[in-house]
Image (cartoon, rainbow over the protein chains, first blue to last red):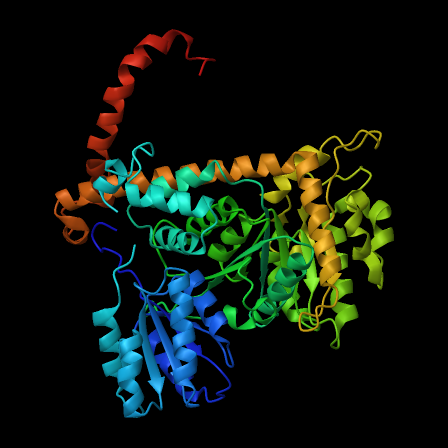
Length: 139
Length: 425
């Protein structure tokens, strides 16, 4: 390792939370993050906030990406964040949200601790670059 | 890893950095976050992971470690989910390490095993951790073994390792388990053929999953035939309770001793199982322990140490059918391992291997530093290519100063013990 210092892979959890069944976007993102060299845990569909918290804590991910297209972000995202705080995982987890989020709600989510919100049409490179830049330093 | 990692701050585990000490305390106190972070240290081989693992080591050793392997799509993750749920029902806590392959090009990975963990939703007593294979130095099997240590020290009653059964790396991983279950799909006659060469040899239990589909009987029969052929001369003794169609062959697993063969098992190192193609010698590894159990099995059977005949079980991962029986078989195998002393022997051998791997790795790191001091591997290789020197000379030159150091340290003792060295230490 002395010559080629092993670059630590960034670990992400791509999470689908709530009753929203649209996972095409999450799949595309998962794939793109993998191709960017990240390790991506995909939650699968219809997860409860508790499950997302459990996965984020146990997998010790650097980045939690929540995909929501159902409009329930104002209820679900705060629950996830609460859960992360409960396990002391909030501070060093980068939380990003993707999906359909009205502008009015964006400020509120950011207030809660969401680092960035990526709407439809965001170039993949932009998301990846953001994660690279902001992923917290880990062990 | 450089010289500093080997002899630097990490080296004496007595001087544990505060962050690591906190982490150890957290893990032992049962904090999820601490365990998760500890595994991250272990996975990344971060500075301090050695101290971490060496502190956790003394607290581990009580968990039953189950390895689950098999071809992609055999239903490993789904079965692991059901296993975890069933263990939980009887009050056991469960840790799962699921290893997925990573891309050799980007290093990226999609870790998808977690999707199947639907039966343990929100149950924090099940700690599930996905791990990427990462072509990392130091070996994935070491990282996995250390992760098992962490889960064990955390207090998990059962630790399940799940991995795709392809390649030596994965076989090594699964070998860190006490009990190895190999999953086989029904109707995969060809698969069984391809598996024979390697992975079927490491199975303590064979699981025909998706047992509600066509071809179950045939696959079970094939596996049983294979298992008994492996048993060599004991067909007469053992065939009875494994006969084709003996659906409840695994039902007696629950009573602990039920699967113990009376004796007379000759599974010596010399048993060449010709049918397995490639002239596989049974007993090269796991079989080696059977050696001790079975080598003098010719005599009267009563006083024999017990031996283990691999079981063939059936499960339906999606419904959980057969999972309780499977756990019964796991229990029986664990009991056998502990009672017969095979576990102690195997564990000892595994640690011996681990020590060697670590020592080789550390010395390799020292050698890497020496190579760098001599202009780097590329420059050396280029000189060899131009026929200015040869690989042997370069290797000797690199190793020489290291060897000299070791010699200088051992020389005085050697002088002293020369007289008694012949049969002494």
